[in-house]
Length: 88
Figure (cartoon, rainbow, N blue to C red):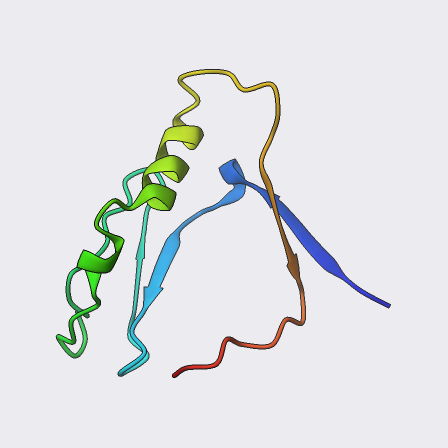
């Protein structure tokens, strides 16, 4: 048996950045996402320069704004019991 969770872009309540060094998290509005440069908890660099163009974050905010009606919906699907990502 498999249980999935499907959400649309408008269902996203926040984008959360988690520091791999200390586990600190920062949640921000998906409509005005700005990648933090440093962890607010331990001041570790979060490598925001790696996401310089921030295509995904910009696209998320743009699509949620709904300035242009799209002939489709983007849905994200997750397994409810997905294992956590391994930290390197």
